[in-house]
Image (tube, rainbow, N blue to C red; front, side, top):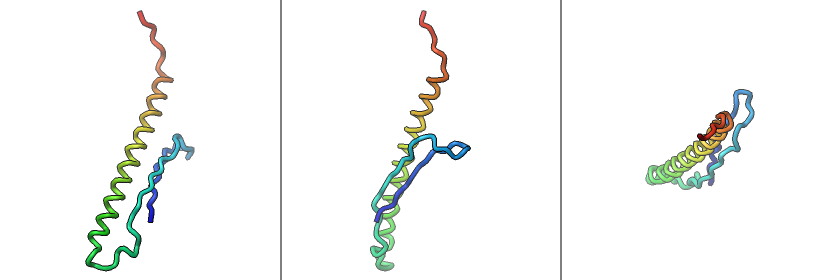
Length: 83
């Protein structure tokens, strides 16, 4: 089974500013939770996969956000002449 995390940046008007970041990760199937004896082990696998995917999505989204921010700053900044 896969879980998909999508990160989008939207303007106040609802338009998307950047291309969405999509992260897929494998998570345990429902039938892997066979009983109380293995619940903790399987849930741990699920939790680790989710945390890794979340961190990767946040890192990638932050990079994209900062790249776009730097482009905007460069466009707004007037060119200074060298002496």
